[in-house]
Length: 336
Ligand code: 13P
Ligand code: SF4
Image (cartoon, rainbow, N blue to C red; front, top):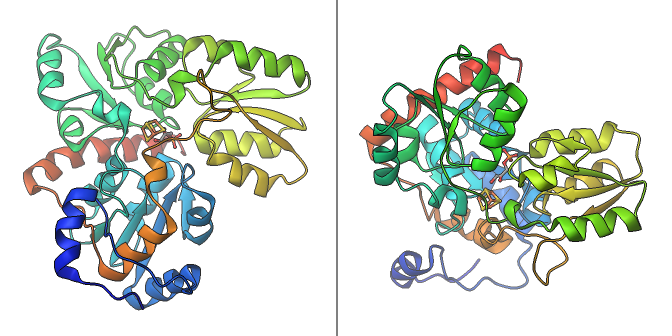
């Protein structure tokens, strides 16, 4: 058992966003995490962009919609969210009486940060006859200013649940919004936000990869820019990309989303080759620096000491709950 000085851990937690405690290097963290799950009736929910070890120890791995659905139906007393802040917030909004832990409280999201609630409130006031559809990758403050939430799995169904003449603001991801506009023929007003991971894929390098692997299919997340989406063979949320790569007949795939998903792709289809789409910098693949703040060590510590815990103002939670519930209903009706 790690020797912890809680008096030291408090300030370190505030400054670093996680418990800064030395762990006995002989400890089997996989076993310890399994023990803690049972002892505390805790469930570990992990996004596909988490490191492979975290995915392997999780009770459920999924995309944003799947994770929210799991969070809504869990009987666990503690939800350990291996993902980023807005995802843990969503779990808390759905479960006010459960303890929600995030291994590193500083695991944020550039897309969520691109929409500060006070600015968005002013923006919304310019369009009084518009409804607001917000992508789940936003803060509770933005959710509270929205009529309905969507994820990349159900964005089209959520948009199409409104009459064609309904004026709509879509926030915060302009790339997903533009993609849905194209698919549905709507003319939604878009907030100018983007994901730092998906917007830096290099079309030039992708085209070079396509020449090197002429039989590879390009599969892309709709948070990517239009130039990349135009040359993609398949576009979908992380779960949809995973399912497609498993069922499809090709042998090679160029994957234009965060590299964490490739762990599951490779597990599901060991005979296939998955090539990360390169970003427009000196790296060969594209990791989300926020998602990757979580580590197996931090996951273990947060379960052992039940810190850092995600807390939320009750009025904000109630206001953010309504548009999430509306999304859940539309999703259920669409069989998603
Ligand atoms: P999905 O997992 O819903 O496809 O979203 C991708 C993403 O960027 C999560 O941060
Ligand atoms: Fe946010 Fe993009 Fe990271 Fe997802 S991949 S958490 S949208 S920065």
